[in-house]
Image (cartoon, rainbow, N blue to C red; front, side, top):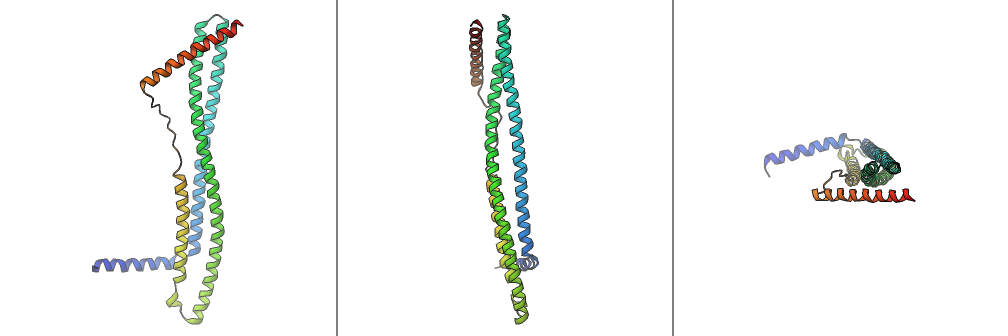
Length: 231
């Protein structure tokens, strides 16, 4: 082992010893709890944003449905006035509104699934925080009791210099493990969030076929309305 490497290890050991001596396990537990609460609040903010997106989509769906109904009524009125050209135009608008409604419905369903996933995660996160809070208070109580006992024993035996920091180092290791486990749970769950893809990746042929299908649907709608009016 080189002299430089040995010197580096000695410095790191002394630095870690200073950190361990200065760190209060109770403060470490409280900090871990605060970080978990902060993570829960972040999850709730994200959930609120996604729910807002869902509500916006539902409002747009309602508007699209109203447009479909309006165009249907316009087509009937036009046929009753012997204006087949206007009826065809109204039904063309209806088909466009229907396509929009279907797209919005699909997007809303995807968002709803994401909302449910976030709600489930929020509940699990809250349960974990509640359990950690109980464990935190138990550990703090146990540490306080052990610390008091150590001080009494040190006063009686004069072992303060030799044993100082041992109990605190063990407690610090356990506290950091709890904190890392909580963080791992949060990161692992949030990594499952989905991303909506709103792009139209259809080929030109697919787009043209969709247009033909729409025109055919308009013709069918027109014939249906003519039949209804003749009755």
